[in-house]
Length: 71
Image 1 (cartoon, rainbow, N blue to C red):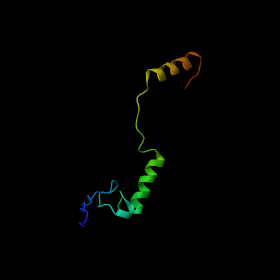
Image 2: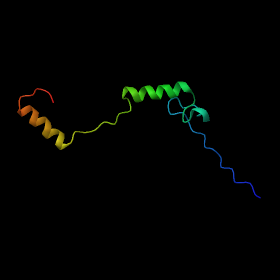
Image 3: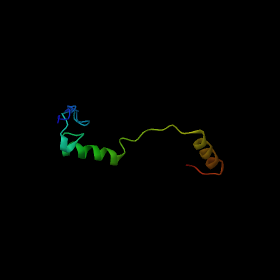
Image 4: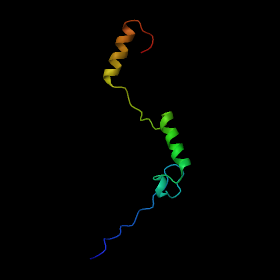
């Protein structure tokens, strides 16, 4: 019987600090960096900005037309 081919693991860097990632905390290097990432998600730092659509603009115009100051 032959042994299965060993596939080398790629050494990835921690997305927070750039140090080599640790298998147990992947893709991070430590629990601290994992917590920093979680905090950024909870604060909304990773939110994707979106441009208002034409439908959104129509809703705002309708609200303003009916005397609402803010949408």
